[in-house]
Image (cartoon, rainbow, N blue to C red; front, side, top):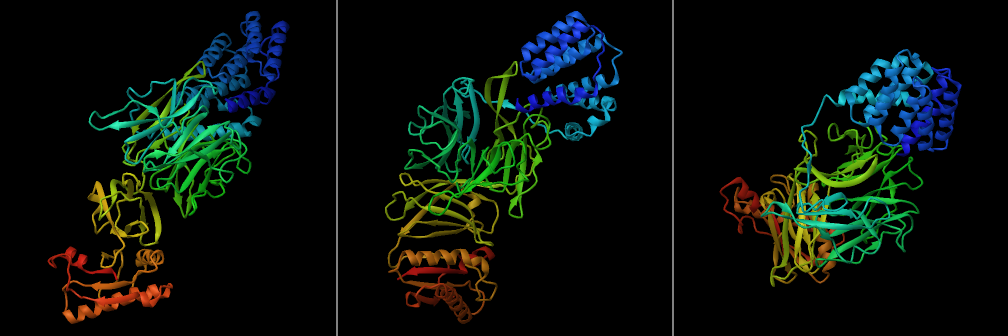
Length: 639
């Protein structure tokens, strides 16, 4: 309500200066009216209303008292009642001066916007702006209103066909439930529940699991005794694989400020004791509403700390190689404004940020916006449109990795006060581009020799740029992992664990898009073991390594560093096109190219051997272009 209060005070102290006379001459009624103005200056609104009512009782045509009574009702979050009062005054006084009618139209325009009466607001503004004083039209509030009316005029012509649906029982059983987040497989939902409507009421993080057999969400329960405590645990975020949880807690003994961010890791299927994220992330004031990138490497959150652009801004922090978090940085002026930017949500592709703001042009209240990465930074935000956004506050949007549903919170108000809040969803419009589609795959990493689970690192890498798009971890107790990847060919998947031979995939060639359950078997390092060294590329009939080979080559260097006693034989293979002598020479030269790359990077030459086998050992019949491609490869043998 902070901005509404400022708006009312602006009207009382500025707009009224353009009309100093009254429409009545009864001095007693005027005196009562002026006493009401004095109460407004002190923000004693109930007392002010009593004075305006008294002035109207004495002089029923006192239009100025109707106007200021209506302003207070709008301040109190009662726009329908405000409209009723000013219309009652207009009905009794049809010969009001143009300036006063302009003030009433200004109030009615705001009331219509507050209740979502967009066409009425547009009509009221268009029909009466000529009545407003020239001085007032030069002020920022008038110019901002004119911009918003023009924006809405266009925005309501392009309507998304969405149906908002309240989530069924057993969800939505608490007084308040809000800020829903889901894991990448859309089978686990976390949300914050509060026992009552006041800030003093207890908050906890609850979780519900989706039952595919019944197609319903299960009974919600506290996430874990290691997370929920006697203190408040609130708005949270979870990594795509469900292994990293970051949440908000306020007034805890080890906090740095009002509300801090805490982190917990799931190890062997158990949530560990959370820890404060430290001074690099938290400040002396309010830090809340976190959103973690799918792989847990970038954290976005909202804070009202110093150094921003005003109000609440969106900040971010990066997870470093040692697990620590970098000094938080402001996301910048394209996203942040002098007003509030809150509830950030970074989509699963790490390239699209959703957030809520009352500082960018919108439909009223707090709207949802989308910002896309352009040239390495987030670009100019775009309003998500109508009716995703409307006259109410829109917050806490979450869109599934499958792009089927968007989840959000809707609040029920009673006399302008929060009474209940519920979890809702709607089908996300296909017209809003979310970039390349993502695949979600679950699986296990196991020891090939024993069948035991292995806690391994899974990295999805863009081979063209050698940049890691996602990084996930398998569970050490079960071997389970959940990962996602874009449906494009130029990427490689690397599954690595010290003491094991790395497992390397080419996402396109190995058809990972078609595998819902990917079971990865890692082989312990031992003499005689051999593996295909995927993602090593040569041009046709050439032996020079292509630049996109660097990802696999750098990982082979890391493997050699971690296993200093291991020597390897680099073996080149070809298909059967061409003479056998030529193919053996080509395969030998290609194997030597890999060797020379490793030597230049510091690997001791004495540990490296090469061999060219030509087409002697195919892994597939040379009867198709696809199979011949599989036979053109580099393998690594442990000596």
